[in-house]
Image (cartoon, rainbow, N blue to C red; front, side, top):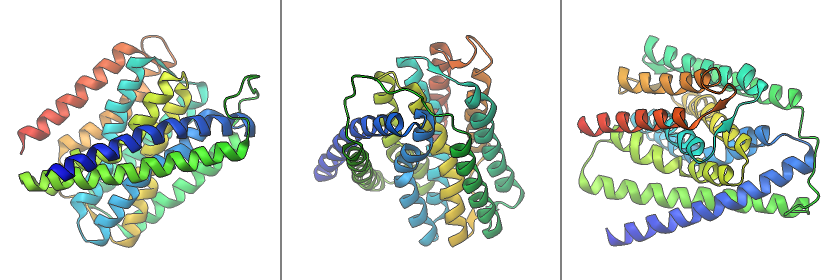
Length: 311
């Protein structure tokens, strides 16, 4: 148990250092390549920070453990939106651009509705539904790059001047996030199993939280560095990746049962996606304000309190 705790803390340290390197490298690439920080967050950072979810969900699918596979993704999306975006907006309100409100947020909401519809109608994600997820994912990524207007600016004082150094920072940051995430997840799960809790609870809480730590660290660092578009892109990108790419790939490998998910689980997932869309039209328009972020955090802790009560 003591060794597991030490390794868990080592994983957390890797995540923190990896997040800082990833934000610096990704921001430099965005400026030098003329790509917006949002699209970098949506793609490179979103995919990189979703790698732990991909590993956990695919492993669960291959082992025939649907509760781990689907619970990890759903828990991660709830964690990403309510806790991570909530904490990010508490640090500094998160601006929402016109393309975010007209394209990215509605697509993330539509993808969530689609998953819930598949989960409720067939009580599983089938092979063909997995293929549909993957086709939508590819189309969305292509559309984002084709319609991205870029940044159009490059500051005179640049921390990372060499593009290859920026790429190394991204790769090193991703490696720290992924390996740190694995250390954290493996040892948190070992501690939880020693205590004796269900696979669904582990997936929705420890695995979802642990595999979302890269997103959490990346968004907090991005918020502290006033890069809120990178943070928003990371959250939306990770959520889209989780459903379309990760569940899509897992369902192609083997159909994934959603029987273990309750109305509360699916309702929390839907509500988290709806709230991002609602916040763009309430309070000060086109941003997530601090009071809205506090409400998201309260909903997150309320959902987790319900999970603990069901133990």
